[in-house]
Every structure is written in C-alpha cells, then in structure tokens.
Length: 150
Ligand code: ADP
Image (cartoon, rainbow, N blue to C red; front, side, top):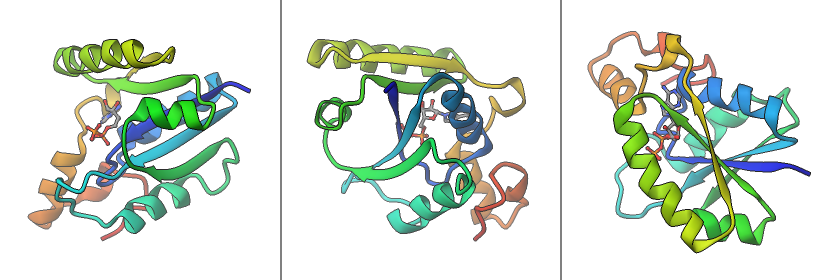
C-alpha cells in the first residue's frame, strides 16, 4: 500500500491544501493529513477545530485520513509504515525552505518527499493570509473549503 503523509499546521485548511490532497489521492492509496502539534506555536483554531475542518472536507473520501502528531515527521512515518511525505510548492521561497527539510529528512530516514506544484488558481493562498482576512472580518470563504466557517 502506497501511503503518504501531508504534514502541516492547517490553521486553517485552505483551498491550496485541498488541491494538494485531492491530487495526492490520485498518486497514493492513502493520504494521511497530519496536523503537527507544536506547543510553542500560537494557533487561531484549536487542534479539534482544525481536524474537524479537514475531516468534514473529505468525509466522502475514504483514502484521506486525518491525524494529529507530535515530534518528527520521519518518526511518524517509520512508526506507521508511511513511505512518502507530500508537500506543496507555491514559489521559490517554499522551494528553498522545503529543500532543506527534505534533505534533512532523507538523512534521518529512507523516506522520499514528493512535491506537487500548486494549482495556479490557489498558489497565492496561505493560512496566514486567511487568518489575517478573518481577523479583519473580510470574506475568507473564497479562500477555504466550505467546511471552514468561523
Ligand atoms: P506549515 O506549518 O508546514 O507551514 P501549512 O499548513 O501552512 O504548514 O502547509 C502545509 C503544506 O501545504 C506545505 O507543504 C505547504 O507548502 C502546503 N501549502 C500551503 N499553502 C498552499 C497552497 N496555497 N497551495 C498548495 N500547497 C500549499
């Protein structure tokens, strides 16, 4: 079984994440959307809210699982028999950042990182911009799946 993990904060899930997950399930038998728990980080949405937004977006898609995890992504992979890490690339800055993480992960474990270029229509979207729009009462609904409601 080809299994990939799509790790992130998903604070909240955006149409960009949604696109990567949708395309991921055409490549893998299972895509595990894994919400990393980082106690040093401040989030807009609770872990439960972030998890539910994603679960509700994919409730009719049995190939998508949603989990939360602490610690290194590669340790999660080794423990749960996951061979691939899936990441989205929006721009050169993402590439540089992701390259360093992917090289480090390869040093730590024999796990391949697979990158998908974002769809042009969602490549400008980030969770931080969504949070900014929400904070200022803008119409965030254009940027997120319709299961994300504040
Ligand atoms: P992180 O805390 O790792 O930055 P995010 O939840 O922001 O977590 O992102 C998780 C993954 O989703 C990363 O691979 C990131 O590049 C990708 N991603 C974020 N926004 C988009 C987007 N608009 N289109 C495609 N991929 C995206």
